[in-house]
Length: 247
Image 1: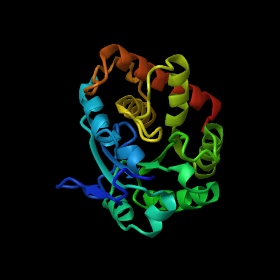
Image 2: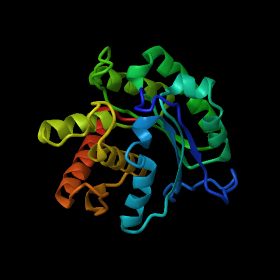
Image 3: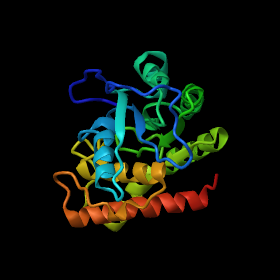
Image 4: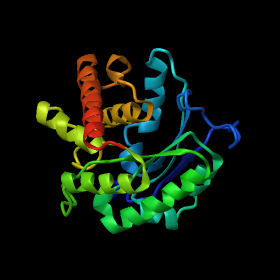
């Protein structure tokens, strides 16, 4: 990603008191410890990791989520794996779920597939569940369409047995239904607060298998009625994606 500051930013915030790798979740226990790996598409607008914690707090029953991140501005799977030790160091600490966000317009499908395999391999060594966050297409790099991004994720997910949070498809659905609701900021690449909130709801629905429609948390800048709309879009998209792409 091209950042306004042009500076590569490495953010790695891991809370103290980490649980042992041996303390893995049971099949009946919702995942509590999440790690997000990606770039500015993940960390803009205070980050999906921040909003997913607040969404969990507003759920019924309340879900206490520890969401950490290893995110590097301007990077993608290949560079995150080869040039930066922080993501792999974070994975090794042990989580219930690791959410992997690729920025496919910035890289190639071949590199995405190769490095998705590498990341998923590292994650599964710890017993964690990998989840792909399928991001969106944008105008600066139009060599690949949203349909092609979605297909690349479908193929990688099928090969590796990984769930996909279809955020980019939810963006398409929301834009069709409410074209005046702008999911981008001015650069037409990074998410507005609406875009980040929608992405959060899609990830929540994917990771927890729950309908977020009745969760009343909305961040500042998102009205209650828009929140209802975006959460409904998230759930509808996740359900449709699962029907069309059964595991």
